[in-house]
Length: 347
Ligand code: TYM
Image (cartoon, rainbow, N blue to C red; front, top):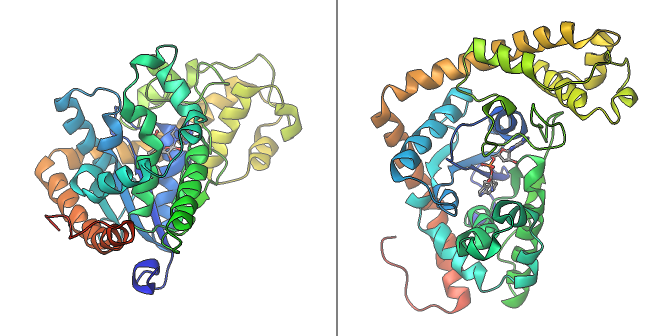
C-alpha cells in the first residue's frame, strides 16, 4: 500500500459513507448518520455518496430515482455538508465501485453473505424472487469504502454487520494476494440516536420502507406535520422516570427521550432530569417544538436548492470527478495485483 493513497494529503483519516436515494430521508438517517457526517467533515477528508447502484437492488422507477437522487443530495447540502470541503457525488458516476465490487464478489464466500440479516429482512419470505444484486449488496458496500481506502465509516447501528463484513473482505483480499492493500475500516456509530425507532412500534427501526408515513418524520415534513406525528406517536400511559433505569421495557418512551437528547445535543440523563415525573402531554409538545426548530430550516433550504436542479447536477458531477481521481490509482493497483493486463478504458 503506497503512502500517497493510504494517507490523505493533509495526513487525516479518510471517511466514506453512503445513503440510498429511495424515497424520503427521515429523522433516523439524520440523527444516526447525516449529522455525524457534518460534524466529522472538518476532521477527516470526507467522501459522501448517494448510492444509486444500491438503490436498484430493488426496482426503482427511473424518474423517481432521478428525483430522489437530487433530493437526497439537496438534503445533505441543506443539513450542512460542504461540497467544497467534502466530496459529494452519486455512485454510478464512478465506475470503479462496480469494478471493485465484482472483484470482491470473487473473494467473498457464500456463507458470509448468508449470514446478513438485512438481506433476510429485505428479501422477506419470497427469497427466490430477490435480485442477485440484493444478495450481493454488502460486497458493493465494501467496494464503496475500499475504492477509496477509507479508514472511517460513520453509520447508524443497522449497518454494523455490513461493516464487519467489509473488514472481513479487506482482510481476505490482503491475505489471498499476500499484500497489505486495504485498511480495515473503523465503523463510527455514536450519539444517543444510533437506532431511531418507528413512532408506531418502538421495537421496529424507523425506515423509509415502512408503509405508514406516521411511523417517521421525513426531512421534507413541515412544522404542522412534525407536530402532528409526534402528538400521534405511540407511547405508554406512565409519566417519564427520573433515571434511565426506569425506561427499561418502555421502548417507545426510550425512543422519544433518545431523540430529544440527540436533537438538544445533551444526554438522556439531562432530559430525564428535566422531564422526570412529567407525562407525555408535557413532553411531546416540547419534543415537537425542538424537532421543528432543528429540522424546519433544513427542509426549507432543501426546497430552495431544488428550485435549481441543474446546480445540484453540477455539484454531483464535480464530486464524481474528484472521487474518481482518488479511485483510479487505487483500482489500477488492485488490477495489477489481481493480474489483469492493461488498464480499464475511460480512466
Ligand atoms: P440507508 O440509506 O438505509 O441509511 C443511510 C444512513 O442512515 C442510517 N439510518 C439510521 N440510523 C439510525 N436510526 C435509523 N432508524 C436509521 N435508518 C437509517 C444508516 O445506518 C445509514 O448510515 N447500505 C447503506 C448505504 C451504503 C453505505 C455504503 C453506508 C452504501 N454503501 C458504504 C456506509 C458505507 C444504507 O442502505 O443506508
